[in-house]
Image (tube, rainbow, N blue to C red; front, side, top):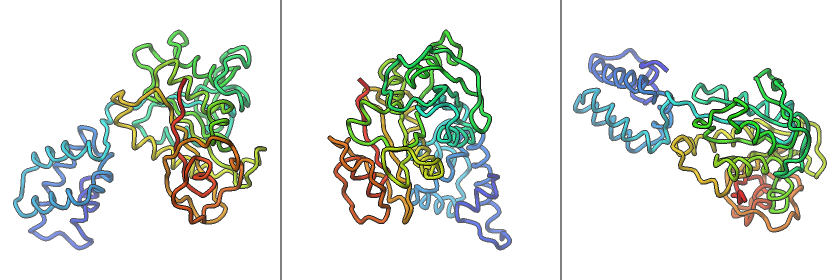
Length: 334
């Protein structure tokens, strides 16, 4: 975004030619945008603009008093924490893994979305083959690592083992993926083919969640496990076309955006990991996010998702998920 686009995005410039009275205003905004861009805040402009009331006040002050760009810079520093902005000069280190195997579609679409942001530094280490249902075990196979790529060609490490083995391999400095003093800020596990809702599934069976738990419990790295529901429901995995991975990517990126500053600062707990389950809607659309506890049992966990439901207050992750909500639950890491 150049300074002219920044000015237009602020709502202060229409399509007409600028008048003389707007020239100084535009200059001030342009200089401010340039300075903000140089200190790495330009990617947060749209987020800052969402802080509507405060920015409206600032805009009126600038227009009425011709405040210097230095004040705009100061205000930018003040507002940026409110919008969750981060310093683009320090990329967020992200380890991506899964339990469906390094060649799966879910991990591929997630990685492609993450690397589209130059402020993300992505490393991929995942099981060489399908390892669903392995929980956080570390006894699946030999643990041998091989250099491969994801479906779209991003460099990856395939580990002959469980999802937990892939995490342990990546986070062992002896293997060269990370140095001891620069471990990832976060591990994202997924996007899994199928939901991982309820205590029994999330805490015991799920290799997707198991990988996240291993990162947090054994290495002190915060983690997100993300799973995509099947459009047809049922415990047996359907064809890949039945998963709306775009919605899962959107949910994962929203989670990352919300937690980005805290992750970069090392202020996210590792006592629990977040488990995010995104419905695949055949009608209607995802109804938002609900932070809910894990269901005590798995009854209904594999039902089709109803994104046209009118239920507003789900009691647990199963009920939230099958009623069309993104279901976010905390899972103990131990």
